[in-house]
Image (cartoon, rainbow over all chains, first blue to last red; front, side, top):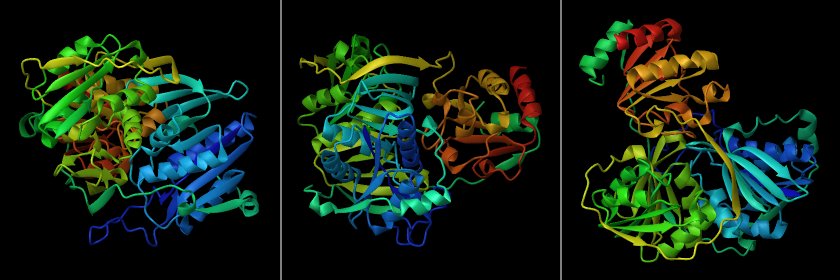
Length: 251
Length: 311
């Protein structure tokens, strides 16, 4: 069993983002970046499947500029066996990412593709579903538990949905997007960070994958949201109730 | 413009999200056609037909659609979607699961969590946990949009029922199999559409003590929400999580109790009309967005609040 894990380099979740003064995007130069936290969960799950002897190979893949190499090295340090960098300097939309991943899936023939349910930059929550559509594979979004039966090539996934939890099963190959509570990712140890430097990291140019990429959107502006002003401090429950009843009129 | 709206429902009742998506559909085009796909769901079609501004209902009633699986449901939508200029669904787990699959098959982009329709091809939506608002123009002919329901008022007016047209296409079977589902459904209002929400966080300390939040919610007739920390700690089930990756809510009154106010939580509730925060830490970031701040021990203040609300 082979698992392909798609990882994305994003602005570190603990960094407060700054909008460019010309409103054309987010400041990403000289800003700390990290692997998208949901993708770390996807990678962790793949590594746990290896430890459970369900999976023999974990391949991390990313799409982007040379800056993404640090994200792939991090994936290798965490335990991925090898990594593939689909190189492009263009900022690509989810559908184009899904098409490039589709081409890579056809080359690599994994039994399972794991991705974070959303990247914390665009918050789009769509690449995994788009990839599943292009492959015509089953999909399980928002995975919070994953049970693999490698011998039967079957996967059972519990999903966090608005109504609660839903468990579904299907035959592999399939695409699964991971939610917060699936696992707690490990940290990379120093020896593993050193060892990662010896692991294979292949570079493929996006333009060599035979995928026709086109622009689907044009970003007109990126602006700060309306800011809420802090209100007032109330001294007691009585004052709070009085304000809610007579000032805010919500009770 | 002809707009197709994918209706979320449980086979018997239409989900409140549809009335919000319909508002967005009406802002976008003059024709709004609602697709009701499910099993034994004709009652849903009847409810949908009465929503003001709906032109027509497509009803696909087949056991193959019992569990709303994204693979065969997207095939159905694609078969129905000819001659439409836009396809809309709520940005709920139903819509998020299904809609990108349709967009990919149509070879068009999806704009996620649309909060404003500016023109027929230009939309606003939040990125970076709501810390930036992006305005995007879609270059594709067909616009596929997931709608943030809290950003559009619900259509409340009714009309004489419109035409319900049965979709007579052979249903494709799904590659997925349903195993089971659990839900923490209760008598309380549904979180995403409730007028009042009481949310608890790590400050509640245990699942037992989280009951205090439920008692306060009941005293207010409110839904129960939670921060990620409270769900991770097992105080309450996942479907109560409010935030960037949980549910987005915008009630008239939001009461945050023992919640420090991580940006991911604030992303899910900052459009509430009135926000009240109760926290012992005067420096908690939640107070920066609260209209009314009550600093103190929640285990003293909340019981007092419940008692006085009941009085």
